[in-house]
Picture 1 (cartoon, rainbow, N blue to C red):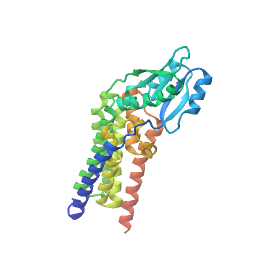
Picture 2 (cartoon, rainbow, N blue to C red):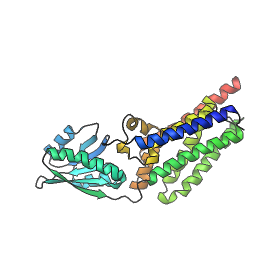
Picture 3 (cartoon, helix red, strand yellow):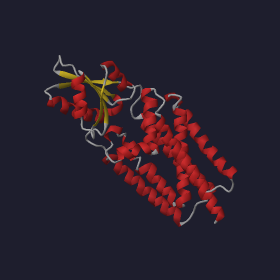
Length: 303
């Protein structure tokens, strides 16, 4: 059982991390899109020219083959927006997914409007609906990570950081998987692919927390709290991915909450199965945590 001064210090650090997370969650959104995925459809010369002129810090733009294909990309979550240029009219049509939220749509409309306005053209916005509230993936991912974090803390409180035998360690891993599976089944209404996703996120958070404890003792709880509360702060504000500023925009996809949110968006909002890279990121966090625990246990035995 965990007691003493170290536990109080870790509790204090967790409180500070939670407070910092709250501040970050409200301060992080960018006022302009960050590498938003934009499909541009129009005459080849025009669309290619606009793609080349697009600011790469604002848009990850490419030329589309047709209006229907561009709209399908937005519907399937492969693009954040699609603009269709019709030179016979004075306005362009901008398709925006409801997954971006009102703040994301405003930022995209303003950024695209600047480009169209410089060419003397207007923009008509058409919203592309999604099957669930856009905040649902955020809630699912945040709840899964917090559950895994708490499961690890409870296990450490009851049995300590290390299990005495490989069999006992495997038993703890199975318990984490069981907790994740129960949580996953509770989310089955969002799609059956959500079950393994939630299970994997709970296990990843629990094992990462346990591995950090193995490296830093009770300070590992605080480190894990910072990872899953402070760094994942934007989840609490439902910040659209396209409004997360650099360097977090580049770093987040390689963290459990970033990869998890990308998977949850695709599964819950767009009916997909998630990108292989995002599944791999979650799997790597699990594998590294297991490896860290194995090495730490062996060193403690030999020491």
